[in-house]
Image 1 (tube, rainbow, N blue to C red):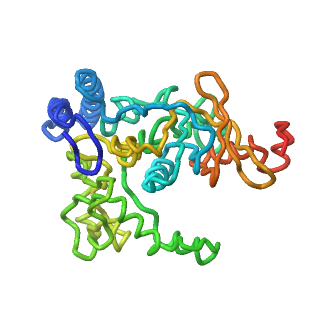
Image 2: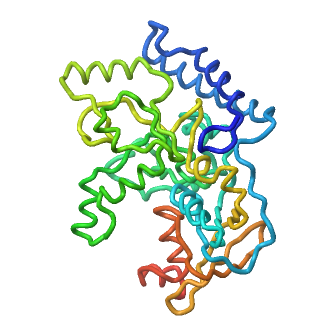
Image 3: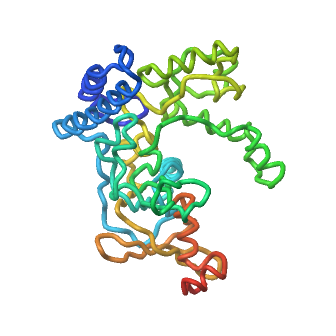
Length: 359
């Protein structure tokens, strides 16, 4: 089947399997203890992942075709480092212009079948799809941890952390966006400005919102927004408690942001829709002016004076150098982007000296 706006996915194989696995452990059908119900929910999610993996093995086509990797040209108009949430969108939009020659480099690999199962993130993270970043030792919390270190969820896979998260769709508060422009001169970042782009990427499928709130959503974009496909006992208790406390039921991505709601989720047809699924679907990957290289780790940005002229990346144990005509665009995440800048000689002098990096 071809799902709207989202490329080719074996949807028919998925729907009965996901429904079957959760039907086996219906959270609302038992009067047993909350602990029992919680265990059954997680067991159902695990079974979904196993069955979904088997389904993909039997399917005639994978959800996203691995990019064919042609001989590497020596030069591109744009080089994008990182195929996470930002990198996937930027690669999609830049390659819409056939005159732009775009290279997208991702250190991780393709999404594996288990990542498409909603809410499987606690089970699916491993050394192949995650960077394994840890915090420094904490002294105000994590007291039960022997090292007092926490894990930072930074993913190494097509779609980045958006391929391995809880899929909750929550926009930032308008006041924060407005503050960026008013106090920090971030021109173009007021909420009404960025709202245009929020609406462009959305395919909003929630009906019980007001006409006023519908004006804050888009209906033809790449990213599906739905309520999760099932309720738990806890969700009923929470929603009823909010009603009894006289809180207002809202669309928290609409006009008002204080109230209660079911969570809005980037799921559709019983599976996860992450940045790679939505913005780098098979139709986009077929563009001849877009080259996607997975398992390609950028280790340095090249400069001539203050202008970025290319990158060096490692693939299959070899270093490759590629030049850029216009821009190198860093989309490697909150940790990866500044780290790459420092490895390239840009950053606090004391850090560069400490690691013996020449500016």
